[in-house]
Length: 200
Ligand SMILES: Cc1cc2nc3c(=O)[nH]c(=O)nc-3n(C[C@H](O)[C@H](O)[C@H](O)COP(=O)(O)O)c2cc1C
Image: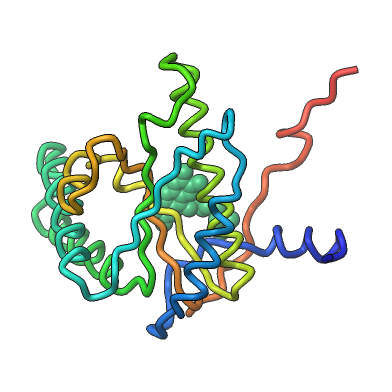
């Protein structure tokens, strides 16, 4: 068993990685990461997470990129962004989707709730977020870097349709994984006094 100090260091050194080496990630490694992610805690053990692996250089990647960029293009056009800015953003976003060695769309199965109250929905979303964090930490354990992308939240129906997913699978996030090709700079952490309050 890892010593507590080692484990704290491991947890504190996970960072978002946005540039990857092109090296493929072995299937066995991806499988191990997914199994660990599926061990995350969930409200009432409902395990509402669903993982969609979208293969590199596949038609699925192309369809996903088209769905996400057309939604973004619509939003940016409606907001009055200049055409050149829209095109540059589209090109950058498509490149990132295509270049990620591993792309996992993380969904919530909306039927995986104990009751249909607002609080159950919140707990399910919190549970899916736990799976994402476990997944990123499992990737870190494998020497991989990862990045959580919220984009599918802005195009849930389009994303579901593009990947032919069940109606009950609600896209929540996209995770890019790969061997790191960057070392992030120091992260500014809020002082503990700001984020912790002790009540006697
Ligand atoms: C809910 C959530 C949504 C995020 N969405 C994005 C995103 O769309 N694009 C991105 O580059 N990073 C995204 N991130 C990563 C954060 O920017 C990152 O975790 C934060 O800046 C702290 O840096 P660190 O992960 O290196 O510790 C997201 C993280 C979370 C938890």
